[in-house]
Image 1 (cartoon, rainbow, N blue to C red):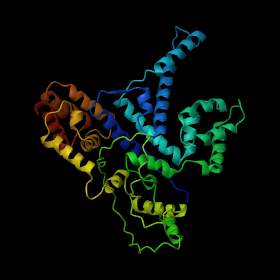
Image 2: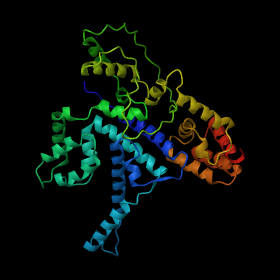
Image 3: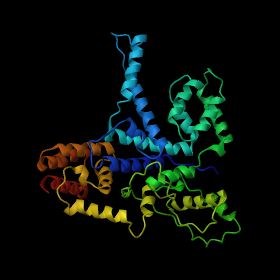
Image 4: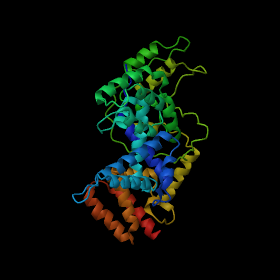
Length: 409
């Protein structure tokens, strides 16, 4: 049975990782901005950075497309040349702040995961897009933003007749066949997952859509005879529906540079002892067991469950910092600095209906207010009315304490 991956889980992981990386870069300097070179170096995964740049190009092209006037001829040759030169100059003057950058980064992370899990979708969205007229020459223009599996895409475009437009459905059908024939040349999913796991814990099993219990049973029955038989599994118990849970806090991680040697992935499920070089079949069996065990658990709950019982040094420091900020820390210059990542996710989900940008806008506005009284009034009157806070006293109280700490120490 073909593995089904969850797009929702890819999006969720993209938002969590984007928030974590932006906290590391913008946390101590919320007004900082990124230029073009900084965007291309922002993560150690080159494909993520390229997809951010591609999104910026699409937004810029859409803005330029709105330049129409009943008084001037924008189709004139000289005008178009001047606009092209203007675009080239402005493209070297990128200046992007966190509220605009974070959603682009989250989408780029999601698209990068999609590229290894479903290359056909990447071909449809990143190369074909929505513009009509698909010729090999036009499609090659988008190859500059692809890094993962780029040779496979190049080989496919080389098979198309030059200067001939093709229908979208025909190209998608041809690419599916080409992908199946080139499967051995595709970038392994495990390699891409390992790159992300260095930044924020992730396993392939956490991206599955649903569990495949029949497949897991078959894989176990056909396991290598050298493996020791597993203990009998307990009778299945129907789990009650999971209540909504807050996203688990993520310990701050240093952004690794692209050059250091890649660390070993953090194991997330207990696995039996394996030979020094496990076969693909053995790896598949292990992954299938992980699916069956974790399919009903949301991604953020799985990440939370994988935290070690004994806190690591970074976790201990994070907890101490959170306690200090919440209870006894000295006066800070901004609310953004005082709010820990755990509190931030809690405020976003409980007070701002999961809207990350609305949260950032509200905190930024409170940081500009001159007194604690005005900030508290903004919370208890304006925000409480806008978001209809009911039974949110605990979270509102924490926010008001942080405001008091900011203005009165």
